[in-house]
Image (cartoon, rainbow, N blue to C red; front, top):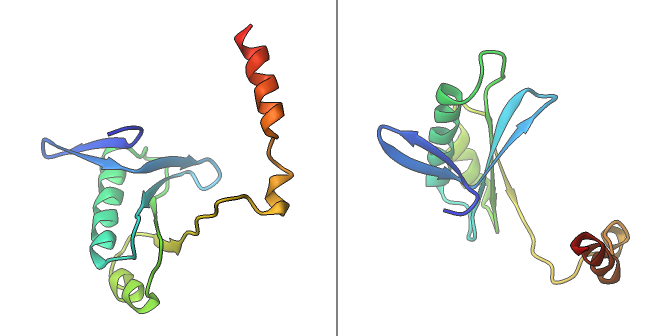
Length: 124
């Protein structure tokens, strides 16, 4: 299952796409990446993951885990209805795919030549 975070519940394995720990918030952040549009079942799955993290992974000093669902599109009314009675902090956002980085971000990344130079030094 690649680099996903495995959590076992009731002798079954489940895989969270990405799991981070936020030092300032003192909590785990579970991220689910979805290729298509948001579906209501994503909310219950995230709620399950957050409960499992809070019961099995988080420390007594940690705050409750937070969930983020990233999808290619969403209908705000469907998201609102889905999350209305979920008692866990879950957010849903859309992502955009670009073939090239925007100019304002491009300046912050190394050039291909700089990467190659680093790779040559690293191999010695």
